[in-house]
Image 1 (cartoon, rainbow, N blue to C red):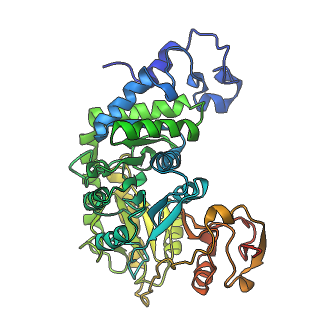
Image 2: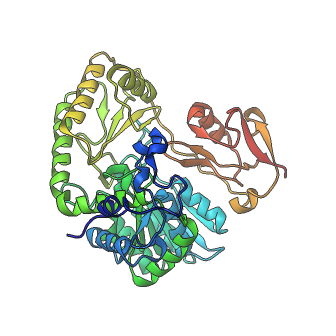
Image 3: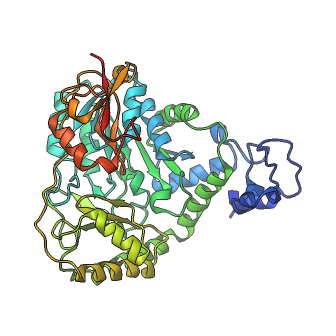
Length: 468
């Protein structure tokens, strides 16, 4: 087997004098942080180490390995996360002014694409589980109705799995879109591990979507910010490569690319065995928490109504039958047990697992939940509401260019929003520029103020609104 990029960086740089960027000159002795962050192997594109934007050598070899591993026609390293892949992918599959269909619960990067390219979105809304507010799978019948009502749409953007691990029937969805001449991009940022082993559900590539984007760092052993994009055919790959030149840095980090290369090689060599260990740890966890009295694990006994399938790697702990919120449960896990979770909401906590988890780490989570559960009492069940459906008065790309005022919530009813009001995590907009501010939106803002990101970052009591 040829040396990995990491091996090559370690073996071939020590005898060179660096008369090129970066400015630390691989002199890690300059400062402790440079040593800890491995500045000694941090380089720019120099001879022998290939070029991401015109890969012919070791980087191309790694991307070819990735395409074979996931089953793509061609794969591309992403060094600025799935965000860069989604921006480039949507641009590759659309022309300015096109109509696209997208889930309202898509990530902010999809909305940024809409505004950047002057696209006209048609939103797909899904039902939510009443006890926790988590969105169920995209309803195929509802999608078919929307496809038939919008034959001029050029692209469908689907998120599967969701942040909470809910999967939609991508095979049927992609087939239905393709039959109508509509391209499909799947934001599978949370599903890079799927399809690589029989231990987990099938991955998005098996649906034959035109472009699939994965975040490696979310569930697999790769550094934060690393991701990968896959194209289904040569024409799509060419368009995607052209757009990645625009949306990716011209100075990609070799440390990040070495992480991607190393992750792919590890999956090639040991992936199935590691996936089996991960699955066994997850099954042991679920057996341990089977008798919780008050807290509930989503999907522990059966799939929730409206859910096509669920990714078992996501552990969603529902608090809606207790007297505590998800925020309070997250605080207990942090303060009493030293466990930091991925996401807390009104009614649940999301514990994100990954290939690096062990039976011991998941056993510790199980014991913490058992301990907390024993001290809880049953509370009045809470009912969660879906994201309110909104009225677009102006396209987002127009609204973003207009002057705005910061308006108190008390005076914002029926005004036109001039900003993205984003629930973060997971990064889903409650309101988009150009949409009318309804009483339902204001009510939800009131209950989720700490979770909302906006222009007025230091004043959660105001909204940017347009002068119209």
